[in-house]
Length: 221
Length: 105
Image (cartoon, rainbow over all chains, first blue to last red; front, side):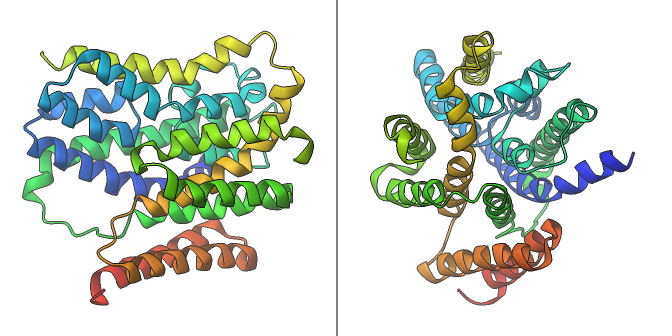
């Protein structure tokens, strides 16, 4: 019980971020004439925030199906590295398929920054974190698409909570393994990438670049 | 119903990204390079995600962006000082929402 509550606590920042983004996405879908149930199904089946926005635009404009597949694959390719980075842990899970499917940016960050994971609690921590985060997203999207236009909520700026979450968790990961070179590499590529790549492809390109550098200059890190 | 093929295409593409490493390396994930990447990629990914989270926010002007970066530093400072991630995240977020809505920026 206590652990469950602690897991819930760790996801509060994600709830704030997902609630605002999911609500905005639901609102956007409704304004594009998408039915609420379609928005709900998309959130469950695709479950990747940034792609879903583009997704709706594609559907409405009647894009080519292969194009949608290819763009979704490109934009979500970063998840490849999340599963890869947790592979050893995932292989120790009893229920691993749900977790792999629901492994979002935020879930990855929360799991990676924990230091209390052992064989007795791994399944609960992994799956419950992923599940809570997905619930926040799906509910916010459905709520946004149903209520969106009737509610005049002002939640401008709340998406900062996700940036704060990633920042705090980055520090926690750094604290456990103070590797200045790896940190510099992250900042270097991360900031350079803002100038080099369009924002939609920023994560895809930056992560590929960083992985290549890590592999090529293995001796340095 | 015309939406369904699109949703399936997006679903399969996303599942591929997420499950590919698992099925590729399930058997031989104890390779030296994979182990090294698993250990070293975490911090890099997190820093890039942090930068992306800031970059993908909508700023009406450059000063608001500067405030967001300042609030991010405040979050990390609070984390170093108080070691309570709820406080570290909530305080700068509330501050940022206040700045974004009421400071005229």
